[in-house]
Image 1 (cartoon, rainbow, N blue to C red):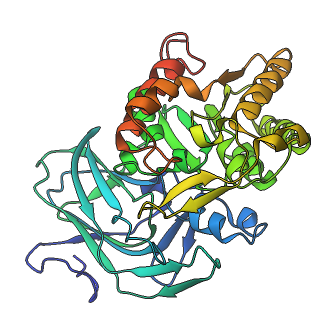
Image 2: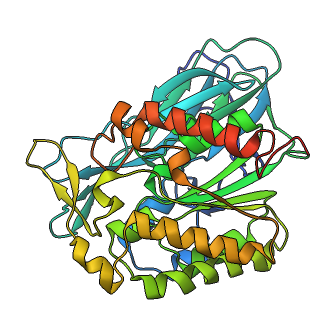
Length: 399
């Protein structure tokens, strides 16, 4: 038995077993970085991170959306020591704490929040950021059923999380991955998690659970920008099915014009196909977002209502010069995929408005005009599972 570290909050009365956190206990990470404290999951490899100096991307890829500890045990108590880094925006009300979800034999059985940790404070006006350091915290789950079972601890999608120590009151072992269908997905903050209730209830996580597949979520908040290093990461990551959701970040960053967009999409798909020549590959166009349907970017924060909202700061007249809107992107993705599908029968397209359309906005509006809420994540996950993993869908498990 190994005692917990001095700075952890463990109960002294439990007869603890400390298990090293190793790659075979983790799912959903692309790479694990050894830190002074423990392991830091990444969703882009080091060589890819070295090719960008963008702070938003660095922050997004290190927030472990879809990353979870997976283990088999009879334990009735589990403790996880972590060093979290939360994000605070100057002048904006504090963001909610990240949620750790505990899933027991496929069913959500508990939730907890972290404690302590570092705080990254960002000034949205200047882009300046500073870090205030804090201590390691402990997440504890008790009252687990006293039988052999599979546990998953989903890490918060909105907090960088260094894994320091894992303690249980019974031995743990890795859960075999053989036979699992791996779904590799890339998208924007909507895929990363945006305002979902927790990491196991983002729309990709819900769709994966309904489809019975093993998710690797490369949703990168603010950073689904057709970056070549992201395409190469998708190319090099083992997967049975792949989806890429393209559009909203290109509009709200006002990153490129139509002339650059078309070859960039082709290049992105070409690169994925280098590593996955016949893997089912689904292109998903943007969901409905009224502010950018016909108005180009960039998106601008708006605090006039007392909460952070977004508005489109572009001019509709600039579409004639090639500025992108969501409507323009949907039309072009439809044209590109139709042309490529002539020689690529495993390439498919899903109009994002089938996941969330105009009528959905009337019922479940985007709270900040850009990001869906928890109820919308659930709706999108259910629809994706039916349309894509269900009978006749491009990722159908019906054979």
